[in-house]
Image (tube, rainbow, N blue to C red):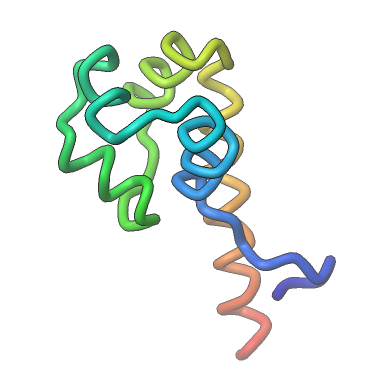
Length: 89
């Protein structure tokens, strides 16, 4: 946990819990319209892949969000992880 007591939340977790599960979407359901490799969407959902700008745009178009939403999730996650690493120094 960081200073505010929250653990870093990966954008893939948000994608899965806030979008895919409520909409009943599978990895394939998201990979096809975004024209993004299914294996990479799966890695993202498993929190093993970072969101890049291109994927942020594709997710935004398909999920009716903004690219900034996805990029902000990624940068917040990255920053919180760095804060946790530096807190242990």
